[in-house]
Length: 365
Image (cartoon, rainbow, N blue to C red):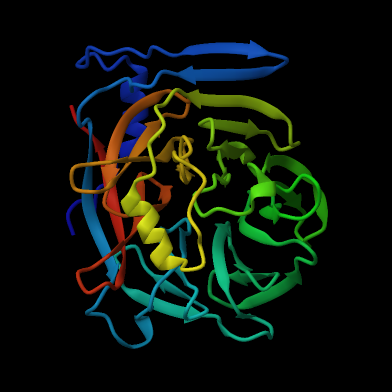
């Protein structure tokens, strides 16, 4: 594959390049930085620092698809992560298993299976790798740990918590996003647990908008990522704000961006009715400011907007590690992770089979 032997990190290079002032670009950041009560706020304008296409995607690797069969063939996948050697761990919810490939896409092994016993899952939805441990989160209220080899270590019940997403930090702490929909003030809560799933505290919460009017498929909901230095990034999509919390759960930084609301189209509403026949229609006229996001291992953010390119791809905003809004880029699939200068996306082939595509991101000079 092209660029397979490239040893230079594109992301690191672009950070150095930006830090030097990008002399070939006649552009400058027009945001503001302020500080109040120890919290730094980076406010970005609606327009990025660089206009036009300044980042290129170079496809390096494709895993999966209609042509794959046998033990290495996953039917679909929910999540993906890589280890330090860039071996690829693909979590398939339907197969209740993890499929492992080396950095060249060669199948290595598979572990996990459907069930309720040790090393088994019912609805596995999230995978997180730190050092030599693999954490699998099961929607059936269970967290399981494996070695990179696939050997089962142990598992813990998440008890009363209904966790939508989970992730490990470098110290082995577990973060989970809980959908607390009961009570007078239903909210999504970002919770921190120790290595045995004992609650250490609540990091942040996001109140459900207009809960008295019921759930709505177009309702905004937060997401989170564990960033560099054990910071945790929590989004507030209705206002396009990202909050950064340190290892002690203290808010230390905010990144904001101005935006124009994108109207929910009739086509989107009709598609939602096809997926959810019982849905009576949305009460929202506009999408939230942003959708899902991922954080690179260097601290860059890739944020989904609800704008679309001429080809129908969602457009993603790109922020550097300082929180500056650099550029926009359309992506043909859903980005899952961004590590070691590589972007891993979930896409579909013409037959509807899911693929994992690995891209190199290059800054155009």
